[in-house]
Image 1: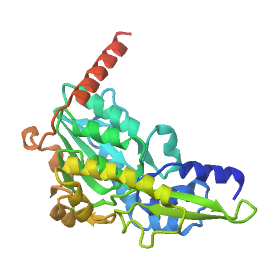
Image 2 (image 1 turned 90 degrees about the vertical axis):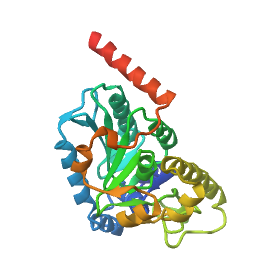
Image 3 (image 1 turned 45 degrees about the vertical axis):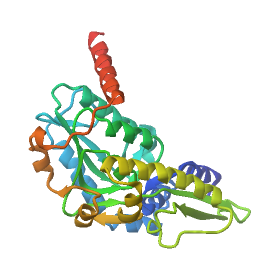
Length: 316
């Protein structure tokens, strides 16, 4: 591996991820064009790309683009905000994945929907293996304080970072073939063991509360500092899920998959989601039937700022 490729992988590994582990491996493999990597075959073979394509087509068929939004659509009085593919903090990082979205755009579109007087409720269309941890805590708090009802509809995966955000919605509805979970934080790093650029060995440290995120987590001496970091982030993750779902953090740790993915029936039984349904049914549902989240000052202020910004743009 050349020094440039080492630097690229190092940049990917420079921060913790809330993502299904094989997808982090795939992002690294794609970044260095290592298409012979077995992980790429595993990811390609899980059927997720077909789910992603179906989700993208579903968004395109929703209705009309929502004015002022980047990726969202408007169907009657319902705003559809997609969370599809790997989640990155900013759009500039999305190119490292096989197709994803960025948190900044998702949250901007949410604020546009809050400020739009025609929007009565929001459906967050979710199909994502997770993504980068950066910014998720603030985004979760903002979604939890939404001034308008939010329903998360899971059409494929709502894994890790995606479940972190989806759990803040007033209700989580799942396609009967969907899955949620992978609650936990993962960090990876390398160590030089030979003189040249190829002499690096990869390591992964998985948060203590997610033993099933990797079947054989590494426990060698010298990784305690990284373990402390990912455990601290996991605590924020768990606390946000607990607040969003209205349960205790202890219940999230014990019953919400312990790092594994959980199918629709199991997720509903555990309290991770509310019901099985279809996207069309959710889009056609009366606003009053959707459990609203409590409005908060931050969300109201964000909506007011977005309204003023759009008014200023129109007056120019």
